[in-house]
Amino acid sequence: MNDFSPRVAVIGLGYVGLPLALALARHFETHGVDVDKGRIAELRTGHDRTGEIEEPALTASPITLHEGVESCPPCDFYIVTVPTPIDGENRPDLDLVVRASRSVGAVLAGAAAEDRRPVVVYESTVYPGVTEDICAPVLEEVSGLICGKDFFLAYSPERINPGDREHTVDKITKVVSGQTPEVLDDVSALYGAVTTGGVFRASSIKVAEAAKVIENAQRDINIAFMNEIAQIFSRIGISTWDVLAAAGTKWNFLPFTPGLVGGHCIGIDPYYLAHRARELGIEPNVITAGRGINDSMAEWVAGELHTARGGKGGSALVLGLTFKENIPDLRNSKVADLAAALGKLGHSVTIHDPMADPGEARHEYGVELAAELPAGPFDLVLLAVPHGDYLALGLDALRARLAPGGTLADLKGVFGGRADWSL
Ligand SMILES: NC(=O)c1ccc[n+]([C@@H]2O[C@H](COP(=O)([O-])OP(=O)(O)OC[C@H]3O[C@@H](n4cnc5c(N)ncnc54)[C@H](O)[C@@H]3O)[C@@H](O)[C@H]2O)c1
Image (cartoon, rainbow, N blue to C red; front, side):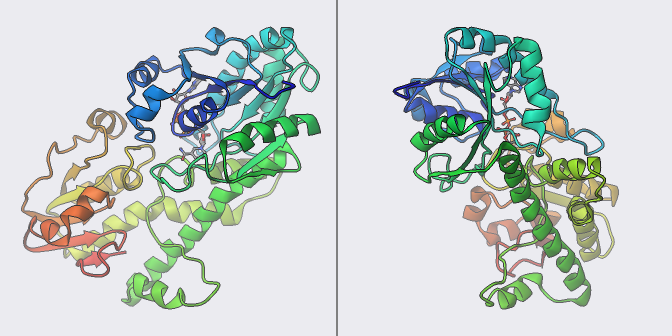
């Protein structure tokens, strides 16, 4: 790597891995790997189902796509960007990271034989210690090599925000860390080439892992506070949005808002930190209190809407199912919980979402999405996820779908107090 023209493999081409791999491919020989054959086939035709990359950018990229890392030529960097979910008991599920490590471990000897001294960089969100204490032994066991001598470790957390076209991987500051000062230099050079936002050299791999996990835990806790005050102010009978507008005039008031916390980052990552805390004998009260409030918010909103309907069931149209606006990502959608809670309270719920994949909605939640936006009339219309399509339609078009005496609910307050109900 003397002239720094490394060969790179990115393992896991999802929301994080694909944009990163394409950014790297603009500067270096890059190989993109995904075990989902359907995903690779789609990408080869220029289709990115996550909606992050447009077809022309995908088809023009010099990246080489693979269904397994074993078909990549020996690389200098193996960057792991596979999911890190939780299990049914909210504990870290590291199975996919371990599997990816196994597949990388199996090719490390080939890379080391070419005198590449390969670096395995983890980008998946984990708790401090996973890279060195869980992944490294797997890499060593499968490769038969010695970590820190034959191959090296690095960690660089990802900060992308799906659907956000401003804070993209080529513009944000990238936190990097490496097992040795030389590895840190190489990893800094690698990421420094792809981002105009610069790199931040963390003092250790555990520090970089910890930084990522607290970025999301901090958001989760702050949103939980907003959700708690929304519940208090609802009982008092004042608008949370009005209160936030007033408090927001103070120079150091933080601009968080209430809402459902779904997806696979803010609602998941705090459990990783909580798990590590418990392993260390510390009960993470603040983290778990935040998680508890945010996880119960869908049910609380359903109860409020039911009360707004006079405690009677009726027909309800829920607009939006994805975990946030303008993206197709359905994972850990709290709108699904909200719709289910409305159903339990006696409402017959129709769900529409122009961004979501109907097959995935059926598979994940047993929900049959309405093919077209229904005309109604409905007793309750809830704008749950303010996709651009709904905002373009406007408040009057949504109100036109109400039965006489119906309730228009605007979960995220996007219509500025003009709906009948909002958080
Ligand atoms: N999506 C985000 O906004 C975001 C932001 C920052 C960090 N992260 C973190 O990044 C990681 C990846 O998240 P994501 O949203 O990109 O996931 P994703 O589900 O969109 O994509 C992951 C991809 O990895 C593939 N994969 C799984 N196991 C594999 C293996 N063994 N080998 C090769 N490919 C494999 C899957 O098929 C999938 O295409 C997670 O740890 C997540 O917490 C996500």
